[in-house]
Image (cartoon, rainbow, N blue to C red; front, side):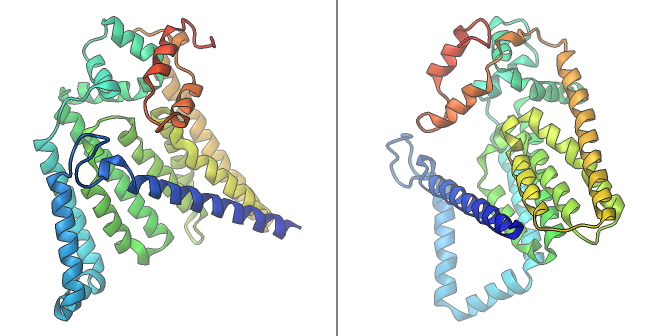
Length: 354
């Protein structure tokens, strides 16, 4: 009965994951942002960067198919010497990121602009109202405020450079995760991350979408260490503490980022139905779980107190937009910002009103 329940749960989770992953890929490929030629939706055309990527990609594919010597050379470089080539490509892409950032670091409006403006302007009524409504952005404001005081800088370039650092740190943690799970896949991981970083435009947006990435990559890495057999106990202890810290960090930076944690918990509960453990193993598991919970509790309390006791900007937390607003955004139209809903919430004097 237990095995049947496990197999049913495992197949259900796998099918759900594959289904949602396929939908994500489908919507990404059909996104208006990557339509070639004249784009009636965005009003833009194919960029020069995308054009060159297509030309280079088609050129390489043609050479591989048409020229045996080029195919042998490509195999030697990208397969036989894959680790060295992948590392070089990754470093070149990181260098490209910094070249791009130093040439493109524009001022951005919306939430990102409000956070940047609040670093110096704390008396404006609109800024106060924004953080009263969007109290969830207080952690990133305090983080940017800390960095601006530490380095005595607050330019857009400065925060874009930090964004690049956080994105690249996330990539490094992902590669370390692959190293823990299967060392043979490191080259493939570096190839994939080099491609991702090459075409990732969000490095010029210092916002929660990018600053949360190291926390997500961090808790996935810590979880991978915890479930990896034949690792020393002190690595698992550090991973348990790190898991608690990174999960809470992800929650405060962007609450939706803990969806992965929910998935991890569900999978672990499912595997409890199948795996049998000795008394010593149960004690070890509960000890690690205690470390995770303790680290989470301490981190949550510390960060929460820092946010509550902040005196940088005066806000009215009673007007904070509830979570249902963001759920509604994802379910309405294309899933983007809904100005009508946002305006409606701003009219409510208390967040509990309906």
